[in-house]
Length: 304
Ligand code: FDA
Figure 1 (cartoon, rainbow, N blue to C red):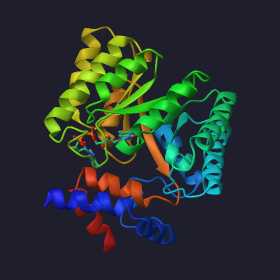
Figure 2 (cartoon, protein in one colour):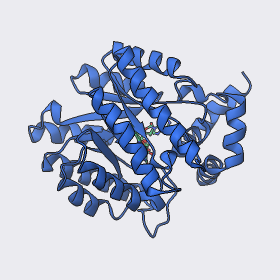
Figure 3 (cartoon, rainbow, N blue to C red):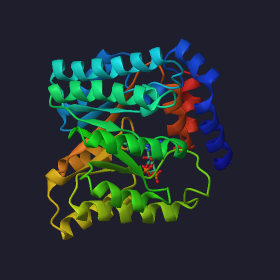
Figure 4 (cartoon, helix red, strand yellow):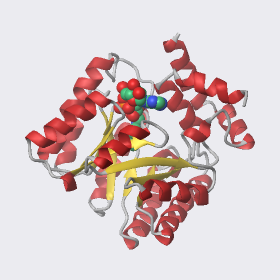
């Protein structure tokens, strides 16, 4: 049953029709637990609340299925607007984004130019931009773009997924450019030809790359709600004298709030990924696919 639901949510999240319908009807089915709102103002308010109890944020303006140059440029303009709003509100947040929303599928040059505009704006405000990692089909191009941008900018980081077999080698290559990495388990449906199918193997590889990247001495964002992964990371940090300015924990908006606060109370840096915007559907489906138990939460909200 769990596998069926997971596949269903993953397919729905990729459906252009479902995404467009959802856009028309606004945040529904309890999506507001995971998405901070449809406007930048509501998102900034959510960030301010997180900042009040010591949590930092990374804002993501949600955008899916860009199919024209105009849409890609609009999406870049929204990223710039988000950076401007963060600076104007003086909240503690940086920016996360997806390269496909900036035109990656249309042209690499278009995507690079949009990234340069965004990174120039971030640099003017002393801010940082993180490139989310999407499905395997986009992995190599995303890394190529990151390596190219890294030659020009210091304020850019990327995400690496523990479920991919290629990840260990990618970590080594990224170490050569002192990459600031967010490490995650991986959220997309991938073939066993490219990704570990068993959770245990993903978890083992996750811990391996966290330790490797931390020992390499580059900034590491450990993005997970898994208490076992966090426990082992904390033990590793203590054993190896890794200081607070070299790493942070990251979690998603609306998930494991108690754990987020507990880590802040223990003195660790915690950053919450705060998505917002009218294109909430694909993101929401990925969160349901990660944890089909959330479907009961959705059903309850359907009848509210
Ligand atoms: P795991 O899935 O094993 O979950 C551990 C526990 O966390 C669960 O038992 C449950 O209690 C809780 N939990 C996890 N997911 C939940 C959910 N959806 N709802 C409620 N509870 C949940 N992926 C990717 O491919 N590219 C990316 O760029 C990013 N970026 C990113 C940023 C940040 C800040 C985070 C935290 C995660 C991502 N991810 C991601 C998603 C990541 O790959 C992964 O799918 C999720 O974090 C879930 O994995 P966990 O490590 O939490 O462990």
